[in-house]
Length: 440
Ligand SMILES: Nc1ncnc2c1ncn2[C@@H]1O[C@H](COP(=O)(O)OP(=O)(O)OP(=O)(O)O)[C@@H](O)[C@H]1O
Ligand SMILES: [Mg+2]
Image (cartoon, rainbow, N blue to C red; front, side, top):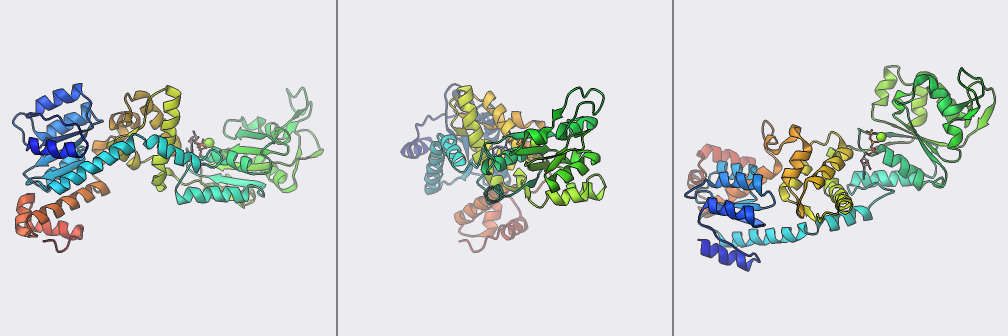
């Protein structure tokens, strides 16, 4: 068996080392880099699943194929849960083995350049510093591009970390005022009593401490853009004055009756539901309707997971350069972890996780070990399958395995159930769930 596999793997482009015991294999793996380990489930010294577990823990850059003569669905699913790449049953289907090995080869070379390739795509599709390949993000870019030349007031909404500040800058850059100032004020950070003078300015003696006349941010942003971050925090008294400025294009410095003309685009951002704030009487409805004439919503990352590989590659590329590390890609388990994490903190969280993983990584690949360490205990991979529906990947694996076994027994369901170590009824349930029909 070892000789046979060695020959096939060699033909598939691998340098092969064979071992006839699990402990030898592990010792060897700790010393020598390997892209792939093929291990038998039953070995004289260690159990294959245990070896798999140790490899995932100690050399996570190494892919694992498990081989077994006892094809139960449970052990296949266990193996995949533990991070095996494939599960092959004996008697061997050598064509399948060749295909699997060829697939892994292709993926290894893809991984050696995935950061370079995908970050190049991400940068190609970049819009004023915003990256995103998903249709929803492309739509956001196109909306900003079309609105930027005309909009005088804009409302950006979206959860924390979705890129509202980036979008505000994109609006400014894509519009006719890009050479003029872009000023930011964080509405939650300014003391309420100082807010008016901060935005609109004041004249000498307007209040205690006002020793000089001072222009506010509106005047300072003349001709450009004023970004009001967390606009939901704006005190009601200031909201009224802001509305007047938006409607008439004028400001009055505190303590002055004189109107000054200002020509400023106002971009407001919020991660609160402003409609609810209006309903609760905390936000003026007239100001809300003035702002939301042009509303752009930044979608949460979990609704555009197809962007994750590109954002990851771009962030990794930046980090690799900054940290002088030869990072070229991620292991498939690391990729899967990133694709399925909940991302409550959206792109900001992804960026932080990738940066931390880059710091921790040694070698060319980021592995699940670094990602787990960076995602924190709240999202360890062992927990993903527990208490929830099995992931699409697991479903797919289970389906493939059942089809394989059915083929081996020429579609005989009784025999298949026996080989799979489940009852015939359990097999029927699975056939139905996976819509497997007519295999012989
Ligand atoms: N589409 C994107 N492409 C590249 N980087 C992004 C993208 N969206 C967000 N980021 C990055 O994520 C981080 C958070 O973005 P940003 O500060 O714009 O979010 P925000 O919506 O203003 O969040 P908050 O509501 O918490 O202030 C920044 O480092 C930003 O560069
Ligand atoms: Mg922000």
